[in-house]
Image (cartoon, rainbow over all chains, first blue to last red; front, side, top):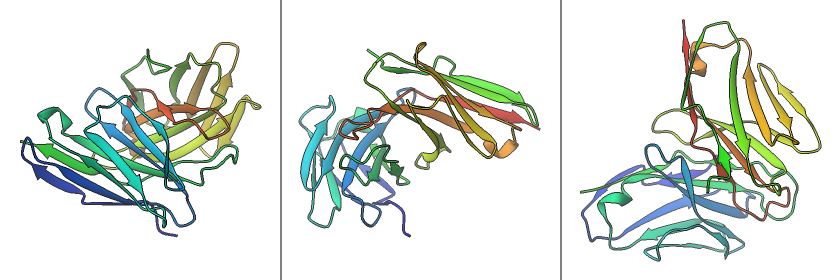
Length: 115
Length: 113
């Protein structure tokens, strides 16, 4: 069973540009969440999608957006990149819904460097 | 306000001994807790979980203990191995699964041979 797949793994962008990251969840998983990890800050929740609808949103500016497609694949977009957006962006998938104790599985992440 | 706290940024343990990683939470709505292990440049790997109806869950060398009244959980690794050296994250959510997973800032475990 394939795991969570994120692309690209590494990318370098210039301040002011925008970037799109992609995530393919585990087959059958309908919930996709995105997290940002920066040194010393742990994993900060960005947003969660379930059945193409944004279910939860973290405390990030509107430059961060996402969407989910009918096949559960998800993309996140960051516009007008700032140096502080340099981070590891992690996608996680789970069955979602109200099944108790859903385990959440992570992809390997996309390393974004803004210069 | 940090809802999940891992107060020890780092921990060093001799190979073969017990590693104990601690986690405290403040949100009384949390009733499902998970531990993840993370190597540099990789995504977190799920280790073990526990729901609030239990006070202990065991999987091989890993055991998680939950003290609901103290809002405290701990991960025990016995015996510790050099390959266990990584950052360990504690995470929590409510059982419905409708709220995001909230993570602590992690504890870096170093197992010394």
